[in-house]
Length: 351
Ligand SMILES: *Cc1c(COP(=O)(O)O)cnc(C)c1O
Image (cartoon, helix red, strand yellow):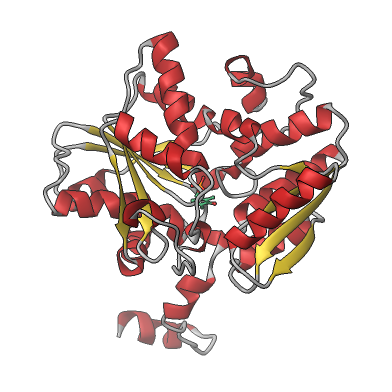
């Protein structure tokens, strides 16, 4: 049967109200790609898979939760959705709202959103508002306004977002017929780590698929869950996880503890190096934040804190590299210019 989207495939396992009316862009069903070269680079002897969430309709995993949240809002005749966003939530909310014939308003931190994300939100017709402040400020504002006015909040504090995002865990278990030994992923506002853990626990109850140990990775300049308190001015190139006060921080810590895993920090250099390595060794280009889970895995292996030998490791690569081309272009060697004839080309290629 043709694939018809996440709510159609997994809706019976999600806690969504009966009034929910499906709005789908056939999100999910993303590939679990073996990464043998990268595994070898990290010492080898273990199976490594990349869950490439950049292949969702708007280029990030946010579409999993957004199909659920917008379908619920649409089903009760809400007319407008709003979110605070580091970029990907904005693009996703705008796309699903467009498809539902609803309006979308997105609040972004001024000057800190990658070009491809902002362009997406604009293309899908969102009303984009820049806040002279951080993501955390923007989130506080959307919570306040939705408490006062009939506008639907679609950040991951919306419980239906988490319901939708559980499907990532279901897909992994369905693909490899059990939970992996380790799950590595970036942590920003901490909705995704919470959703994965909830999803694995639910699948284990109904299908005995087992549970992974969870390695959550924050950027060193935005690592409140590692240092134990909120970060006032979070800074990192990994803009999608540039968050100082994660809304689901407690749940993330609980997921790490219950799974016998942990939450660690990776520096910007470690994150960007992993982004490059993944692209060059495996042909998978992700945005910087999306490489954080793998950067954390490399750190843990290097430090001898995690022995992957004989294990199965899945890394969630949360968003596509195309969303944030600037980071690569900035460091790129300028392409050579050659006269339009064969001998000139021969000269530069063959020397
Ligand atoms: C949103 C996002 C994250 C962080 O997810 P949280 O649920 O906020 O922890 C990581 N990577 C990308 C690409 C994102 O868009």
